[in-house]
Image 1 (spheres, each protein chain N blue to C red):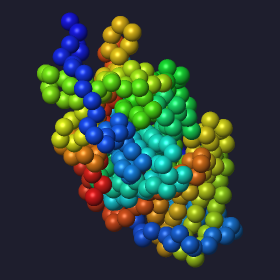
Image 2 (cartoon, each protein chain N blue to C red; image 1 turned 60 degrees about the vertical axis):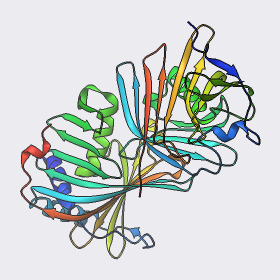
Image 3 (cartoon, each protein chain N blue to C red; image 1 turned 30 degrees about the vertical axis):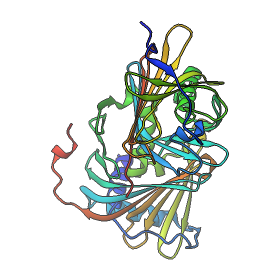
Length: 195
Length: 213
């Protein structure tokens, strides 16, 4: 059974740019999330700060008590630098997985990707299939918010990563759930109301 | 025995005072013995400490601050309850060699000595709160300073690995009563976490149940 059988080719609405469907753009300000990362039997909790700038996105993970765990800067899909990572969590597979997952979250639909547009007849949602350095993925656009609601990254034989964005309003996700199909690696982000 | 004395001392010191002025000037402290004996005297009188706290995480490169608030409780000999209430809820209890954490979704209990990272973190954070870090000359070099209103102790980790995480720790005491007014942990890249203690109450009745989990 093909997950994408219900897709019919479509086109972008007039004057739309694919990048405008992403949640994290240069003009969106900072986001502070409560984070919960579960890797196999290990659990990490803390705060994640996401700050988009005109040239990059910065993601910092700190503990509730203020200790910095990692600091990453993202420039484009799949391209990022690790400015700092606490020694006890500085493992190559972990950093690579976090790097790729956050890259997908930030650049769910990038302006540099090769895209095809579909309509999903089951949910009536617009679907953007995009391909770039971060791989091939399907982005489901919420008609109400005009932002990505769900992202599925596909591999050669099966789906690899699923990211769901939860919000009723277009200016920021209330929560984000990142889950892997083939490994026990899940990230849950919940927005912190600082007011 | 002497170490325990200093630990108790420091707890006692946590009785609160207003935040220091960031502009005040500090000079080298000439007589550290007077300072240390002042701490000891205060410590002998304190069994419990309660205080509100304001934590400011300053991310210098991004010019961003994250402010969180909560409540701190200590009961002699070694029970600590560190509770964040705004803008998120998070609870840490250290008691009987165990560290308990609770957030909205998870509860965890760690045997402090069985986990190297927790052991290190607990030694450091607990050491700052209890004050025994002032005596840990093997791990930290210390510098004592004073202004008109405050004593300031600067701690620099000797261990390279520790220094990758923390460049310096500044602990500030009020001169009038030797209470701790703030702790500042300076990281690499000049990011820092500053914790100000306010509304402190000494020797109130804090039941042991507050430290159970």
